[in-house]
Length: 113
Length: 112
Image (cartoon, rainbow over all chains, first blue to last red; front, side):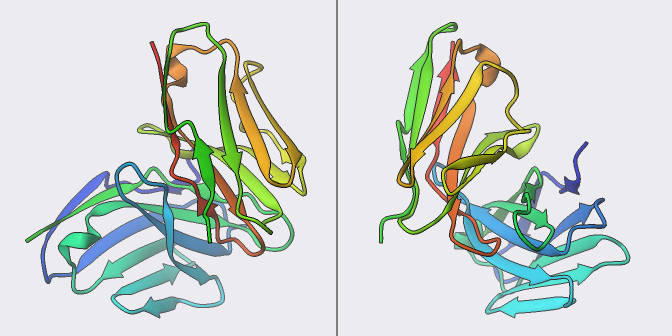
């Protein structure tokens, strides 16, 4: 049972345009969400996170939006750059003490120059 | 600062052989995770250690898999006997506090 779902396995975007990566979750106990970026032959690296007390968190070109009622979050990259081409993993966890971080299956983003 | 260090980076082995993957977490991090990445299931948590003690091993697929953390700077994931369906990328990761996990570069395992 996949509690964190990334339904788009791949996405292609023109350089300079907006990339929108989507993620849905089913566990209502999740209250902390993260995005990781992974280049080929490397481990995932932390990109941005958001707590459930917020609905938006911004860091430079990257913004994460959270819609708790819909159990949906999205990552916006504006403007997209060729170096953003990677696999993006959405992840979710609860809070307090040890909380298992559950990852989605990833979305492969290709930014076309 | 050195990140999470994993070895070997690549391993090709025959079915039935024992495989041992190694991990050195970031110094000062008191939690260590082993993940497996596959196309179908993404990143799956296999086992989690806190202060060298296994806390959650519910993700370990079966008895062929075992993990140890004898001290704060070293962990192993062992598969015995290995099977072709174990072929995947195995990531070790560590965290000091909060939920931000730092991953190693992964061990690419192929069982033929």
